[in-house]
Length: 129
Image (cartoon, rainbow, N blue to C red; front, side, top):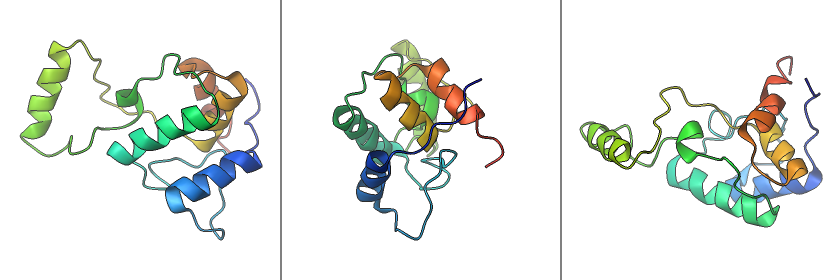
């Protein structure tokens, strides 16, 4: 297993600007976009798209629903309808979302592509933080 990547100054600056993270809050490789910084739904989609363009990261096998819920996805009965429509379109529904950490973003920058298995190693490599 690889050691967790260090957060580059460029990635830290990007996250502070795009999410609005104040300087007093530390950004660590283990920081979760959703749990620590509240990035979800449409905001997550915009952030990931801007991230990919800014850092020239190819989408690879990135699947939004593996990591985030869609905007308004949890409101019943719309969640049932949405799941049904996605299933009809052949979109995989991930019951347990995998959190995206800053370390995963950093690893994707290093790789130049989102490789779910390899970027996930960055999340699991930093349990002691």
